[in-house]
Length: 143
Image (cartoon, rainbow, N blue to C red; front, side, top):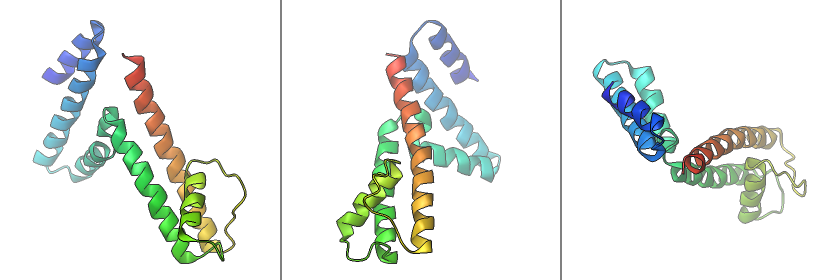
């Protein structure tokens, strides 16, 4: 409660940098409370959010996660070999344009499993890219 009160006070005074830091502390103590109360599902969700993007306070983590996902999906698609005759890096390229939902159309998977992986890659990309935009907007707006 103390972090929440301090956060609201900082926001009312226009000190958004401190409010962001206090939000991070508030969520950290909330996660520790879930652990203490053995509420495992809320604790797991909170831990995942902290690891992924630090509750919006650490957008660089999300950018690193996006890069990891592009390489991961590219490698996964490479091993299913949906683009015959293409190199590993062309599969990474395909994963990147699919993940960022650019979709130039110069490469297209032929196998059903590869098409499913491509759709999954695009869905994860839309979600994480939206979170990155939200985190960066939050950082830029309150400067």
